[in-house]
Amino acid sequence: MDYQWDFSLVWENAPVLLKGLGVTLQLWLLAGAIGTAVGLVFAIGRAGARRWLRLPIAAFVEVFRNTPVLIQLIWFYYALPILVGIQFSTFGAAALALTLYTAAYCTEIFRAGLQSIERGQWEGAKALGMRQRVILRRVVLPQVYRRMLPALTNRMIELAKVTSLASILAVNELMYQGRLLSSTHYRPLEILTVVALLYFVLIWPGSYLAARLERRFRPHS
Image (cartoon, rainbow, N blue to C red):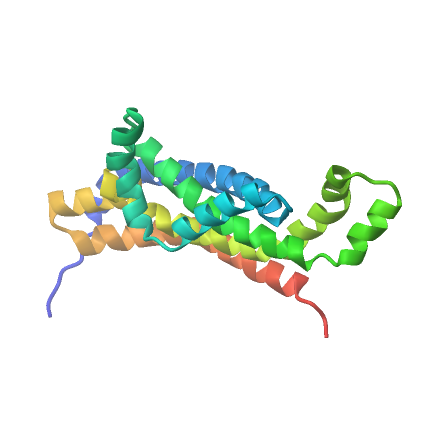
């Protein structure tokens, strides 16, 4: 098959793609930061003894982990305003959906970390007169962060790729801009190849960091 590659159009529209990359970065950082924080709070709640708190959190986690992200995005933009009477922007709906999606997975990551802490450490800290909150902050959470950091890094890498689904809501992120340019100029191979390279540049450092962290924190036999 004879095909003449022409990347001149890509360079002419580089500002458009870079703007989309910036929106992708904003969506990624916002959903990642808030989702991680919410996940930590929910993990502590789910690991506690209060049944009235554990059950709703468990339901939240199962719903967001077992439904497609694409449907979550569509639901938050089109269905949620019908229920609450507030119309979200496309970016706002995408950010909210991806934040809760991330929070559900981070809840389980942190919960696994909390369960990995030996019971003796809790009991020893209580014997020293520490309160529950102090034990969490000074004894437990530092170890949880260390043990779960590789898993959290991998989750953030996955989130970076999932942000491309926000294009279904016409959020002006990288994938949306790439698809728009492809349909306008009829050069999808060149444009989407560059889009893929931009995603690689954005995500690869995180992948490299995750591999390093996994080797560093791997238990020694």
